[in-house]
Length: 276
Image (cartoon, rainbow, N blue to C red; front, top):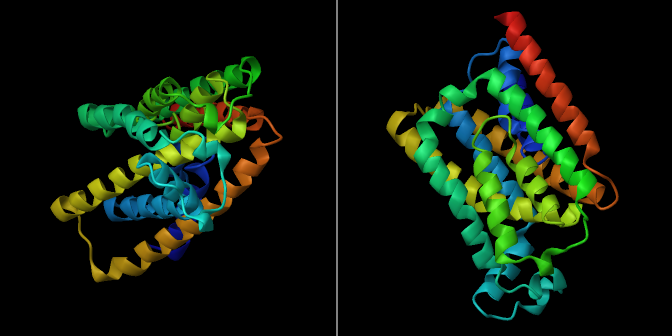
């Protein structure tokens, strides 16, 4: 695979996986626009691992604290203090429960997701529809609750929303952040919970990808440098985007992402009609 293609696709994955604008739509459209050959199953799995390393690295301390609290163990002093997590010691089990809907939906709808739902018309429509719903959440929700106030109901609502992200163009971060806003979480908390919730799903997707490679893939020594570079670039880009987005949402709305989603969705549909 050409070096430029590796770097461009890895950066796009790292950016669009965490911004609420749909990584699946961008990754599907980019080779289409540039006339590149399909990057292959192996490279797609590498990008999943890059994404996984992003959230594990950035939220490493959060995950340690969540695990300690979940098993009733006081977090070590070296982790510092985080009242938003320490006051909600059930967060580990809330995250487990919230992960189940997407896991079940993925098993039941796998074939349909990988075929029928990958249409550019579906992607464009979902970009627009979820953008409108995100705007409604921004306009009408209160944006006042934090992580320590989250309940099992909040997490299950967001988890069910995550299942919708299996439809290309929805955006996993976009739909889960939107659900969090509708539950009156503040913007930064909605994004932080969305990223924590992504960890088990992305890990499961990466592990499943490895099994798929064993069954159907064609991993050759020549591919290894491209896969390694893809993982590294995705991980670095992802960490940077997470940090920037969380800082941005502490004092700004999601409206710029709404505008981008709607414009990009219209562009995809128009391009699909033009190309027949």
